[in-house]
Length: 274
Image (cartoon, rainbow, N blue to C red; front, side):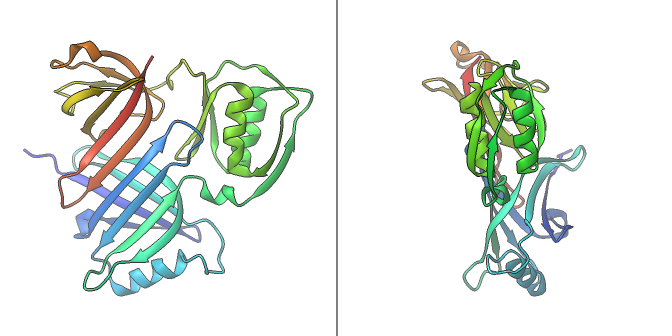
């Protein structure tokens, strides 16, 4: 029995979440890139088959000229019919555009934490402050939950002035750590460690597509979307055709491309050796 893919797009406007589901006959496609550094994660979603009233609603509510300045969130969920959905992306909508006739598509573009980019903050810590305490303040300023996994240390004379989201890069620089946003979490970890939690074991039986390719820092692999892979997390490669690359890696960049009525349903991970 074929386990059919499932895709659902969530758009939050004024605190209300509206879901658009491939199971309802809509054509959905989402692609984007997530980075294990201060670069904002990004995503582009195309929805086909919406009613005109729904299209007009989305275009109006997500317009930069809308007086309602509250953040409009975009959530991309994928999975299988038998196992259910999991979130692969969450961020703030930065634009919405209609397609050219005769198509009736709408294209939503999003970046993680974009609403915090326009909030200017000025921060100065005590002469000596714990990295974990500074991280907690940064997480609060950008509206994220903190996942602190680094070795705590004392930071001297921490200061920052600028957009709230820019604190993520400043935090990484001041603490000599890797700091990045993954959907709703601010993750802080040591450079030589992978995110604690799930370990993705990748081989020909767990969804690997093609042969892994060597890069300057590690490996690049293509595989079927799953709920185990985590940005900054561990990938354990077991290749039969390129055994020299087998071993443990950190996922530094995670691209995704999914479609309800086409072939794509893949992760492309760029990894570095642990």
